[in-house]
Image 1 (cartoon, rainbow, N blue to C red):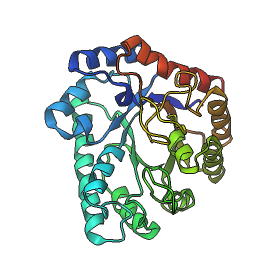
Image 2: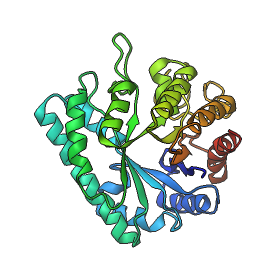
Image 3: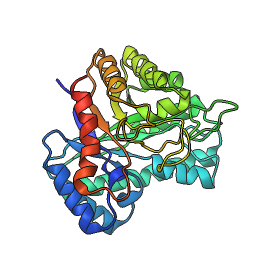
Image 4: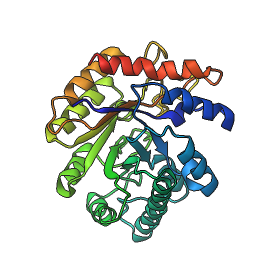
Length: 304
């Protein structure tokens, strides 16, 4: 059984509601797309925006995921102890409250759509530098007991904290997260770019996919690019969702690296649940061009 293909449409979303509505219609016409990765808080935070999103996502998309990384990082910047893996009680409680709000938003979307179309909740082992595996286990045990309207919890791996290297996220090492997945019976998602940022290498992304697949915990695999040079998308080694090469010539993520990772992921039993693309695009890109940036990754995945 082939994994569902989802797109992180928010990274390539045009400005303005009319263009965004047209973009979702265009994406919904592509038979190879089964869902999108939705950022939280984003359009899920406000009741009116949540209703807009729930009614404009294509009705046949049933493999949507929610990533909590935008809100997590917003909170970490304000409060360095914030996170599910925080060794400080106040920081953990704040993160749990954040996920209570997310859970309610997911329930609202299910009610508005009349269908449980959010299949995965991607959460993260914040905070930066001080994350503790034991505290993450406690938080996950609590969150796993909640009603998520049919969605599965998955840990999305981000770059681990490495002394002497400026972190993008700086959370728990992959070894710890794999151990947590096995301990608690939940899955893990690898984002290609975040793994490459961690090791400053495309090889790191492949090795981490291989490691997660060998452990039997790999649920999702998302392809975002990364590279060592400054670009229109940001500074060197930014977690900036660069397009694949050659759409972005400085990106280390090309068709060969994508194929290698997909092949490694497909060695796992049980099989991978979803694979996808999440890339930024030039600000002046047309709607069709935005779709093509995603389609190029899908083509590489399909040949994997």
